Structure formats: C-alpha cells, structure tokens
Length: 462
Image (cartoon, rainbow, N blue to C red; front, side, top):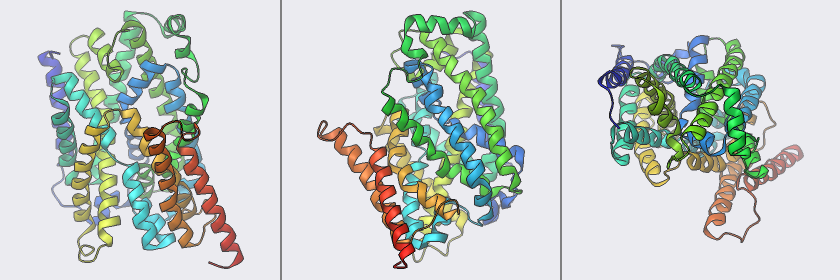
C-alpha cells in the first residue's frame, strides 16, 4: 500500500519520540534503578504501563475477532479480568513485600537455586517476545512492503536499542506515551466505522444475520477449547510483567487499586477491538489474512492524518508489550540463569540483563519465523508454562501452602514435560490420545505432585 506523506510523517515522529524517551537520561542507572526503578514506581505509571503492555498481540485479537466474533471478548478479555482481580486480592501486596526482582528470584528464595533456574526457563517461555516480534514483522510488511523476516528482525532490534540504556524506567516512560496513542488510535477507527456504516447495535444485527456463531459466546468453537483459554488466563497470576511492576511500586497499596483501574480500562479497549473486528467481518468479507482485519479497516475508511494516527496506535500496542517482555526475559536469562554460573555471577545485574535481552531477541526472531500465527504462539507457550509455574509462584508468595523443595523442583520439571508431551503427541500422532487439550494433563500432573509434596511435608519426611 502507499502512505500519504502526512501519515508517514506521523509514524516516523512516533519512532523518533520513542528513541528520544529511551535515551533522554544522561547518567547510567544503578542496578536496582535499572531493574526496578529503585522501587519508586507511582500509581499513574503502574496503571498505564500495566494497561498498555497487556495488548501486544493485537494481531491475535484482530485475527480472532474477525474469525470468531464476540467470543474474542470472552477468550481474551473476561478471563483475564477475573484473574487480574484475583491477583489484586490474593497476590499483589504479598508480592510487593517480597524484596525480589523477578518471579524466578521469588521462587528461588523459597525453593533454592534449582527452583530459581528451572522457573527461569519457564518464565523465558512465558515471557517470550516472539508473538510481538512477529506482529511487528506483519505490520511492517503490510504497511511498507518490508519482507516478513527482515521486518521481524527490525522490530526486535529497535526494541532492544531503546530499552538497552535505562531498563524498566524507559519501558514505563514509553508506556505512558504509547497508552495514550493506542486508545486514541482505536477510538478514531471505531468512530469512523460507526459514522461510515452503522451503529454498534445495527452492526450486531448484521453480524447475527450473516453468521450466528459470531455473536455467540463460543464463536462456534467447542466449549472445551474456550475453557482452556479461560484457565490459561491464570497466566495473569504468574505474569512476569505483572510481578515486575508490583515489585517496583513505591507504595504497596497502589497494587490493588492500580489493577482494578486497569481492568476497567481493559474492558473499554476490548470493546473497541472486538467491534472493530466485527465491522471488518461485515464490510470486508473477503480478507485472505484475518490478522490484518483492523489494519485493512483503517486503510478502507480513515482519511489522511487519521490513518497515520491509527497506525501509531497499533504500533504502540505492540511495541509497549514487546519492550516489556524483552526486558523481563533479559532479567530472567541474565541475573536469574546466567548469573548463577561461576565466573559470570560477578558481572553487574544490569550488564547480565543486557546480555540476556540480546540472546532473547535472537531466539524470539527464530520462533516468530517458524510459528507464523500469533494465536498459535500464545496457545503453545501458555499450555507449556502456566501449569508449571502457577503453584510454585502462589506458594512462594505465601498465598498457597508450600511443599518440600525437592517436590517443587520435580514440579517445575515434570509438569511442563507432561504438557509438552501431550501437546506434541496430539499433533504428531493424532487420534492416539483422548481429545483433551494439553493444558489439562499439565494441571493434573501439577495437582498430583503438589498433593504428594503436601502429604510428605505434613508427615515430616521432607
């Protein structure tokens, strides 16, 4: 497609501002400042950073809302509200009182060095920037004709460059800027779609006539599949991004109120993304790639200038999550894993984090190239990592009973292996296993191992 010079100038200005925000400070930060902003994060920064970083896979929402309709809100919205509120009630203050820098650090305090390293591996899987690197590649291809692979590489390198110097502080600074843009861009697109075609109420009736499944809760998918996504939203309880921002808060009381406000803001944004997808479904029925339904809608109806604003909004959605997940992964691979190795642990945590970010960026590029569906990436990493992390995180934060360390270590190894084996076998040799999503066998293994650990612990044989 061709960009009007004004639209191009708006997008170019966005990238310039992000880089300036990344390098605006002159002094090199100390380790705690680099990792957690010196634990001085305020409520506005916490809230807007939390909101903006939760939507990086916007092409996944675009793909799902176009293909399955209203169930986009049920799959990618409601379950996360439930578990976010649960996080606020059960975990938020407990997590803030733990003087740690990451989830692996938290687990390591309770279950030893092996627990820290093994949970670090699962956090790396969970916090992989691969979905967002892929999204940037798709965006650059659609907007500027950049081939997918170079676009993926460019997105990863750009994020690394502006986060490199200042760590979490620049992630939060850019999140504040990008949160405004993402809401502004989608509000503009939604209002223009309403003005161009019909009201949301009229749209709903048009969708119902064309495809009743698109206005159903399940979107035509099996209930078992929807339930997997619901329980996978427990991801929120072990989200490295959630934990990192809570650890960085200046006042622990802001953890609960910030999350509640975030849920309200997410509800608004989920409404916008779902109905934008429905407008595209009705008025652009022949799209070959559902991932770009929101982009295609913007191209079809937005005037010059407004289109450039929308593009900066959608870029903000992705980049705000990409930089956050890249940074979290860098902390995990750096201080939490590489920092346990002899001869490496003497390096500063900020240096180890930068090394970790560079390595994670390379791996994410490869993952994004070989798994070219945002929804598939989400499903895969959630299935493998969430069951393995959930109980170790809850127990380490004091929100669930602990088990002897050897059971926790076994849990961190066996549960992901069970889920991965079921997942791989179900695709390599179909019809040989019951039609059960791999997430459930992982959860079953988790319950069995933890129950055994609790029994042994109570009997005093730990």
